[in-house]
Length: 308
Image (cartoon, rainbow, N blue to C red; front, side, top):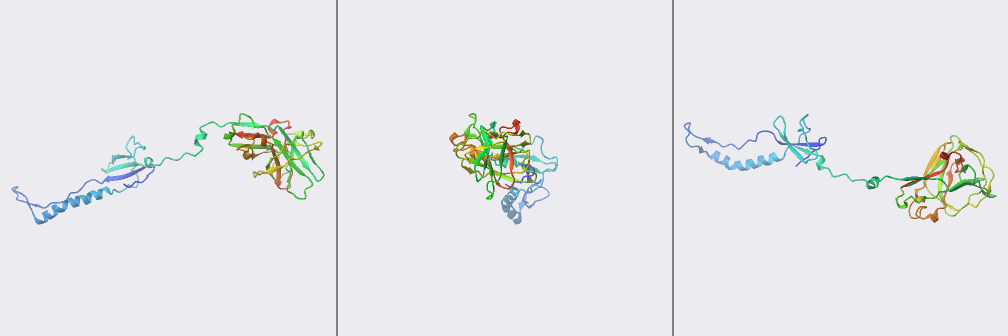
């Protein structure tokens, strides 16, 4: 049976009024004597069953109406039923076929079951942070500075490389196997200068490190400076391909470091691998200053947001 969706229903014409029957020729007297079949009538009678079958077959191939006539849907029409037989005002009988009943149930997203549960998140502040300066002469850091300074560490002729190091503890309330994301948030201070961009990458630190105890200097809402440096042993690190272009001062930027935090080798499941994250530029020529955990304004400090 043909079916066509019209809005949410399809309408199939069942009959168009009168069904005609095969003709039989009869002869007789006006006085009502017995009727006598002629040879032609006999042939017609014999052919009648075949003609009836042909008409019945034709009646089953029912034309489909192009649209539901205005105001013709029966009161209380139930779209969830397969079909409803109904008579239009012009005498036609129709079957109103619900397109809804023929639909396949839509597949739910794989995460649908997970979304029925409320998500949890926790914000973590650094347990330690610093920024380091590496020159041909020495490597030093500024562990008590309100500043975390970074520049492009891939420029071959740079006189100094600036790198920021941060370590975040993972709270015990976090269910490691259900971590959805881990976002590192840093806020810029007075740098970069207008129009300049530094593409900053997170890097996974692979050995322990200890920040120095010097470097304190100016701390303002959108301006930070560093003081005296101290000797520092820069740990090895590997790059995580999750760069973010940094170009605006006094702006918070976010990096997705989920691979460092979640998974079998992540900080959550394997705390012994948690040596922190190193932030450094790998494209651009500008220097960027981020706020550190020493900043006077809590909202300016670095933070890690874990959603699980």
